[in-house]
Length: 149
Length: 341
Image (cartoon, rainbow over all chains, first blue to last red; front, side, top):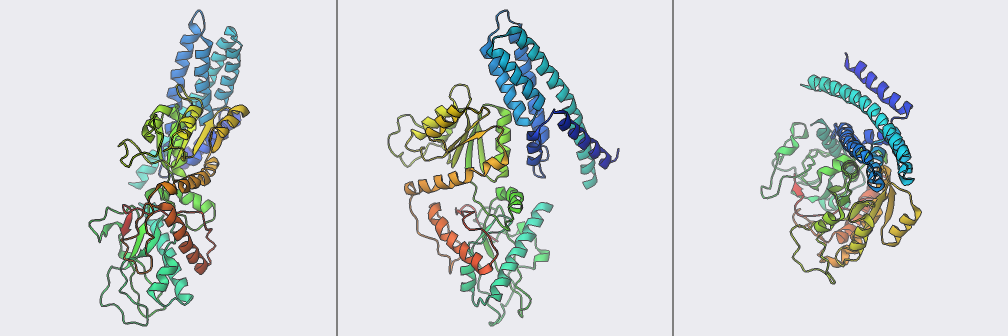
């Protein structure tokens, strides 16, 4: 596919992510920080976010599996995930975390189980879009590198 | 590197423009020229600190017997290192031709202090409508337990032309700062080799172990560190937390996620912090700018230099009527980065 078509596809994808509420204004801030001297900044942050999130979700799953749930530990992890999703502009994930923390405060196990599932659902949905986004970016950059050589 | 050439070309045009204006305004001698231009800043990030080679004369005198450097079109900026004992310059300004309305063109060598981090500031410069901006790199220590937030704050700070060190905890931060629990007086002259000089600390509030507030209190309670401005960040908007931090001595409280526009609020605190440190540093004599040969302008008393060079820059700006805004930049000299082109 020609690079302009690729770029259009990428723009369309990112725009739809904004429209759906997957991403918020903070993601635009990240895009602004990416430039010629730091072409991989967004990709780097997105990748870090995904690794970090999966680590946290795994811990949360283990904690919620306990017979007696340690809500302060759970809350600490959700707080972390809320922070990182807020920093990258992952709006839906952030909102799901806020809900989750409310259930933690109330020590509501069922509420927490449901909230964890919502967070997971939102995260994996976002991740698949991020994967497509990075894939498109790589193809565009590969084309540009080829042009320059 | 295309970007670099463009910046150098901009620098060239700028200096040419400055000189042209000077001659137009009736500058008659190298001394006059020197006086008006020293302290001027360039888009590529350097500050004109003096003239190195000035046997060349004004049009009324005979032309020099030989050219010192080739013309700008053939010039490769990074190849010339006239003074081998100087470290490689981070940024160079190329040579100049004076306006061709004079009978001969001749070359001036320019002594420049520059820093590669200033290149990143160009976008900001253009946004603010300023032609030039030169800023000595202030060093910010960023403390956050979140890796993503560290990456983000690092990029934000570097984009805003700060030198950055990031650490993941308050205790690491104190270690870097050379904090010693029992300090009750000004520290002795020999610094701990792990100590770094920091112009501002920006820290997350919620961290395991030592919170940002705890770190703030430790810094403000230390005689050697108390003048370092501290900014606290938090993802939570809790008014009592905010006022507690401000009362504890924090300069600002940023809500996360921190944005580029927030960082503009750092500058006045850093500048204030620098002038607070003035009393602790040894005063050194002012650099001679008039008949200088470029080698004597180093000083670690940055705020003294600051006021002196601000007035030079203001003179330059008056002469040029370019509408540069005074007081925005604060040149700082160190012998490491003086370079001869």
